Length: 243
Image 1: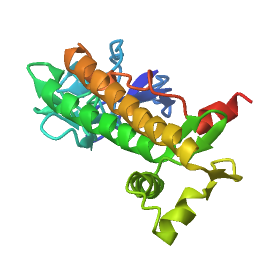
Image 2: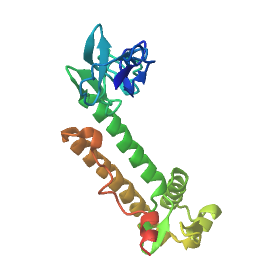
Image 3: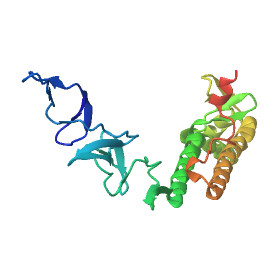
């Protein structure tokens, strides 16, 4: 049995049986296939391959088929040839876009990670301001910009109420207001004086929680994985899930 060698790389391919030749004068000879040797290849481990060089085997690095990453921009590179990894690449994937390569490993750019998470916290804050709603008694009211503006206008109209103004008199009588469950109620001036502060308090709580998360983020040892999902005021959607 001989060892077949793949050309042109020269690496071990497979074992093969030798073929018998014709007998001449009572002697039997065996034919050696092309690109073969009687010398058995050495054992190899992961990312290693036996290559026949000159008159013997040499164990070479073999990353063919593996995807490595460039250390300057983390772009992928598929290795297609036998040999050591090219300079400027690593088989360690870049953990995130905020990591950079130094020495022999990826390092987190903490300032960039904090800046990214700060933006995410602000996005969470603004999304909650628009969609969370706020509760007065048993009623959930919309908290988006348009509804906040309408509530503020109604409150200001009552504050500047003129008994001789017919439009103000109509305002004093109450206004039908849509609720988040699809129903509506009549908002009286007395109710508005509870509703308006509740709206302001709800907004303040959301702003306060966002500031707390900002402060905790800047102190975090792992800012990229900082969890800012806790502590926020209850939402209409969240309350409905538990009913």
